[in-house]
Amino acid sequence: MFPFLIGAGETVQVDLSSFVTKLTSSISPTDILTVLGSVVGVGMAFFLMWLGVRKAISAFTSAVRSGKIRL
Image 1 (spheres, rainbow, N blue to C red):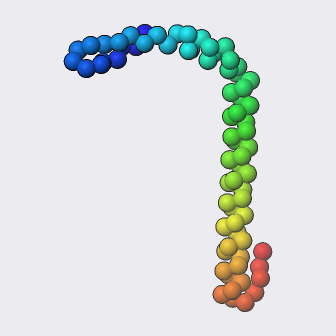
Image 2: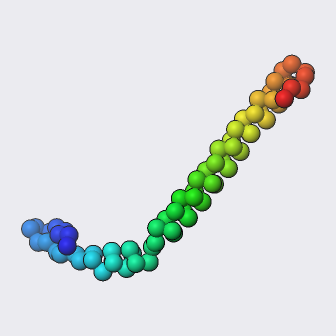
Image 3: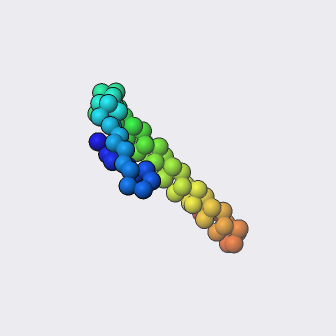
């Protein structure tokens, strides 16, 4: 039960127990670990792509400046 103020001194009690019960029964620890694993995998892919783009940009700019291609 969470009281909320509605105007001048009036409160309303909100019962969230049914919502919490339905939420905990529909989500399992396996679901949470699956989502976390997916987020970590996608994050690693974006991080490695970011490093690759930085490497390609620096290689291109150094090649333009010096006239030589280095890896």
